[in-house]
Image 1 (tube, rainbow, N blue to C red):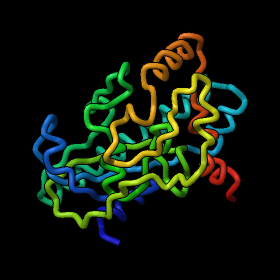
Image 2: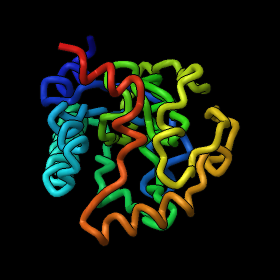
Image 3: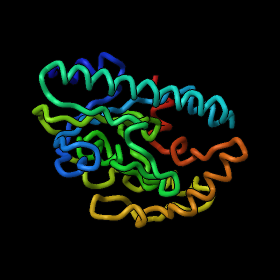
Length: 222
């Protein structure tokens, strides 16, 4: 294992992958290589969803986002100390358009290009180990990296759990591949409207994540 990956995993990242993102990061900084960071959500978070304890769930979720941001920032320092340029793509640096539910440079793009997982029917990122129960982060750099093999097609097989669980039927039958637009697999307007209503009521909508077959397998695993 290379020293950078070993360092990031040692800080607490669950998965680390490398991708060619040349040209995708120009809005931030002209750095051609992406480091995808995946941090699994604790099983407790999924049980909080089952109990509809969204207040504690969101506290847990945001704590994990903050933890991953710190890992990214420490990774940035590590790479710079090696003599390369680096830019931790934290939430505050990668502004999310809430109406589009989309970051300026989607973490999912770097993660799929790194070969760490794929996009599910729900448009959430899916890993074979943890399903959709993850948070994502990234670092951009000019440090030479050995890229993973990009995943360009869904590996969800015939599973329709998330589609059936969606309370507003926003998820289309079409499975993801990297030649499609996001609108081909999900009605983002319907999704956004429902999510906003839920937030205003102090609730949430995470059924597509918690009902994912691979998320369920993660919860059952010792």
